[in-house]
Length: 265
Ligand SMILES: [Zn+2]
Image (cartoon, rainbow, N blue to C red; front, side, top):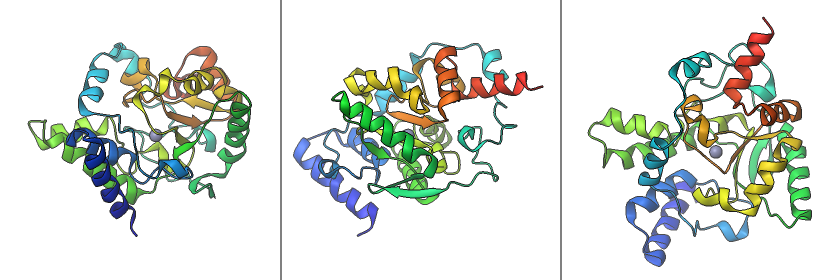
């Protein structure tokens, strides 16, 4: 069966069982589409938590960063051609020099460099009664396209023009070619829940992820720079050295790479 068929089925079941508002659910399903695997209990996304209103309110309430600071990091990372530091986002399409070295673990594909660090992190978390599991790792262009198209479709219901809908959609679902998930270095954890940052698992990650080379990629206070809304569930492998440096300095990846580029001049 095709993934989309499964998703449509899952969406129908959820709507009937949960009585969840249609628009809220479809957005959640679109975002999570096809990405829950390796978890027997997660075949149907029971907790569809995201909504358009949550997205827009969060984005507008974000602390503002001066536009000069934002423009200073616009070109960040373009000169850095290190596998683990590849910069991909709304302003940075997947560069041609980067090729993910994919392998499959527990039903999800990821870059080989992520497997050992993530396994170690999960094992240590588990020893502290913290359960970590991957909702989504590598996503190919076809899946990203369908997620993006669905997101745009949702926004056309509330946005005055199609281009407004596209702009709004870009903040929560990356355009094909601009998703960090195409690198195989990003993982969405524990069900992609808006309230993930209130859980012991999130707290544990905030304290320990850097020791395994992972960063919270889209922090709440960096939305103007990353151009992606706050995503407490999305972690990115960058290597231990970079992850610890970013944790210590409070920089996001764009800022870290900008400062790295500057200091090497
Ligand atoms: Zn993600």
